[in-house]
Image (cartoon, rainbow, N blue to C red; front, side, top):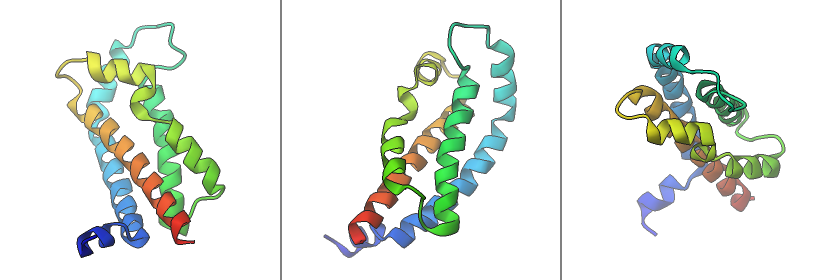
Length: 136
């Protein structure tokens, strides 16, 4: 392994990056306001339990919640449970989000970028939790 590889596997660096992404996501979310309004006005009543915006909100709450715990405490309560949950909550596995992401053409670039960043944060949290486990 190179020195650079070792540094990126340092939990403290990953924790700092999680904090950075959390702040970036907050800004990115604000920047999606117009697209969210447009999407909300177009969302017809469907058979889906939740709209795409509601699904994004649910994922955001969960993922940001985990990231906030890491930012503030450096750990997550019930770590193994969190790992299992994060592994199963793959953003594009949510049918409503996948349909929106892949079927909607060039529109909603900011929301799609937000979805990608949210999933990236989920993966980074998983990496952090695994590296913390292996360092114990």
